[in-house]
Amino acid sequence: MKLRQGKTEKRRGVLGFTILDALMATLVLGVVGGAFCTSVSCGFIVLQTTREDVRATQVLTQKLEAVRLCTWSEVSQLSNLTFTENYDPLNGTNQLGTIYYGNITLGSATNIPNTASYAGNVALVTINLNWTNYNRGVAIPHTRQMQTQVARYGLQNYIWGAIQ
Figure 1 (cartoon, one colour):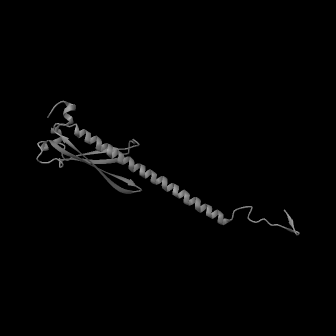
Figure 2 (cartoon, rainbow, N blue to C red):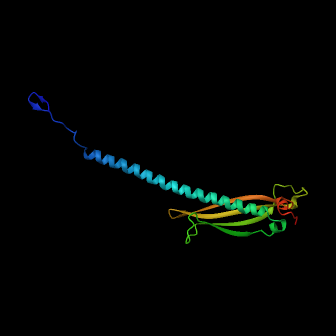
Figure 3 (cartoon, rainbow, N blue to C red):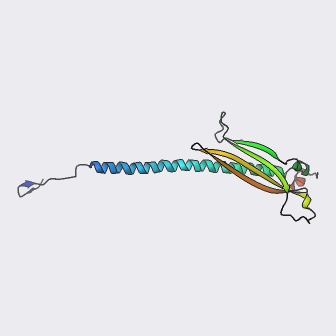
């Protein structure tokens, strides 16, 4: 300590933090920690939703490719066909995971003019897929749809080698 005119100089605020400093640091740490936990939680929700959406696209593509390989007589029997697909990314024995509900409908190809000679030999196949995911106890329904055209004398004849 320095002596100044016979008095000792006092040192203030050098030895520790005040209660106000500790409270502000706790508040900042709480806000940052809460924001981090919220962002991680939202990241997992986005990941689950994206995984379900990609799986729905895979199911739709699989079903459409199977329909495109059917013979013309088999395609005509597919009208109003329903199906379910289960997806459990953890492969648990007691869990079903996400259940996808789908239906296949047939119709006439609307973009082909009626005057075309091949208009009766082309069908429009539509596959609708519905599923529900649950985020924080809230049910959120989802739906996807894909369409393709199938021709009587199309790809299936080259694969199977027979025209039916």
